[in-house]
Length: 97
Image (cartoon, rainbow, N blue to C red; front, side):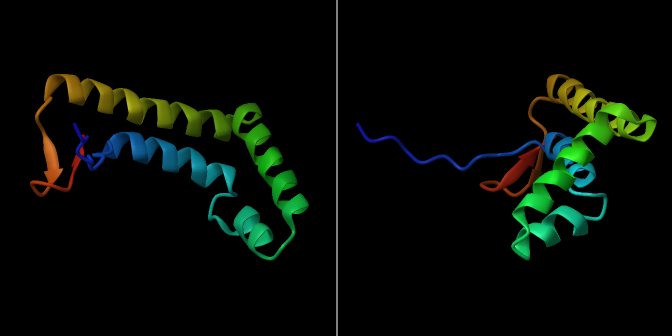
């Protein structure tokens, strides 16, 4: 019996939390780490990524960003339990809360 291919339906709140952390890791506006990696300076990009990851944990601003991402994910988890059939989008391609 062949398995039917399933289209994934990502969580909007999960993606928002992930992109929030990703934005802080790559340098706020995305220019620092990504520009260095695309210009061939892989060592510099890895160094900046490591420094940004440490700043995310060590600084007050970074901890606030992590708490915000956790808050977004927690609200999304609560909303998925409270409203399990809520979909954003069309009938075949949609996002969950």
